[in-house]
Image: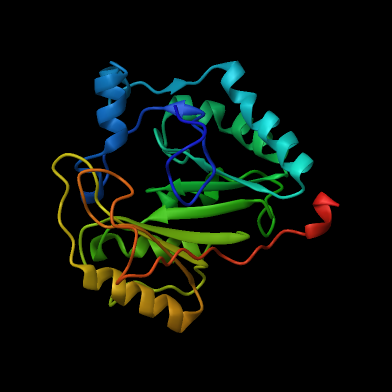
Amino acid sequence: MAENTIIAWTEFSWNGFIGCQKVSAGCKFCYAEALVTGRMGRPGLWGPKGERQRTTASYWRKPIKWNREAFERGTSMRVFSASLSDVFEDHPTINAGRADFWNLIRSTPGLDWQLLTKRPENIARNLPADWGEGWDHVWLGTSVEDARVAHRAQTLATIPAAVRFISYEPAIGPLAQTIDLAGIDWVIYGGESGPGYRSEDKQWARDMHALCSEQGVAFFHKQSAGYRTELGIELDGKIVREYPRERRSLSLFK
């Protein structure tokens, strides 16, 4: 279920639920599906007719511990949710547990929660009543693997949030000439990894980096395409790993 994580742009990966289904071409070689249905032996948690599993009560208490640690060290810590599900999937199990998920986030202001979805059209109707202009410790993101789903960025941009970000991973096609980055604060680029990975044209990363630079959007080059994750982290010989500007009040940790 991942806690400390190899995902370079976060510090913890946390899953309140397990299970999902494919929605677009970026899902073709989904690492989460392979892990859940293979190594974890839970094929019934995947697909449109599959169940979704809520993780244990003790696991749900882990972010409380990380929140205490954040205040002890005096700086926020980033938590990515979710790598094995989609918290905005319209599924009975996730719908029933989403209020508890928001309550957990509300009670952990020392953590920057990075919520990534392939279903940005579901975000607005599933936000808590006190969302307002966005909680300052919640980053909303959506996956945009190629131009066919570039509209996800525009949908995300309509939702108030402290930080809005795009995960251009797995990058399986050019995007910079199509995507509208208005209202977006951060773009993460990553070539596909794992068995059967699809190759990339490195120009896709160069063009996206240039577009982000032009528009004042932070750019994070995670990796090139390859069999394993975190291979080829350099872009033209340089490590480019920027983060969006901190939006929270620094007085929180004083």
